[in-house]
Length: 315
Image (tube, rainbow, N blue to C red):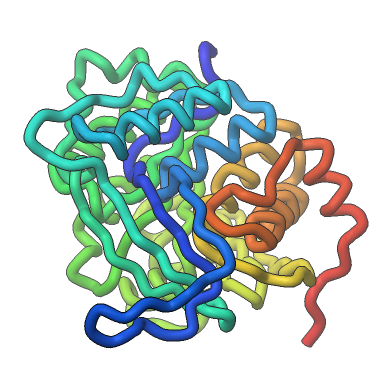
């Protein structure tokens, strides 16, 4: 395979500020300690962390003809990521966000949907972008031009090529379920947040939610639970929970997206599902110690060392 990890979908330019106590009225000003820029999104963050963890990575998505897009592509290439799968689109802006993180971790944001909703992967490119060990689709539900039959065809092609397939989503209600249903039959590991799983199903029990998605085609469900860790269930009946690591949290932006790459790195390094989830949790925890997605992750050896030495949250 040419790549270890291909990350398709939601790439965004983020400007982040911390800590934010309130939004000043009128034309007022509030002071913060730190402002940073980052490439984020369910595909963008995952691509960067995959590269940091030593995976040969291809980015696939869209960006605009603007300064935000130029910066994002340069930033991705700085991590050694192949950006030949990114499409520069005329007439639409790069997907971009202003994210303000409060001391309690909540993150009010302003977002321009932009190019994520407009790029299209044509069938002629399917072979090239599925020449990978893990094929990740991040941002189903935001990919307007791809969601539905196009994403289904791309995922089916990835499965037929023998890729391990992982899916992350952007879902706020059951109305998003058709876009998810389109890809679940070709998904080995479905990795939503527990809030998204609840929004799609209306259920609250973890086992019941996992059963719901597995019945619709997913091979396994991995739910990120925030400070409560992560939950795993697959078609064989293997079920477990992994607690979160105990860290001083600065910003949780992108923690779920980082999780995707950490999980893939575990699988590709021969780890069991339990150890792969632990590596994903460790990657996510490190991310939370910095400002902006992927800030705290440095390398696979350092993440493994953290995983083996850091204590976990206790009830």
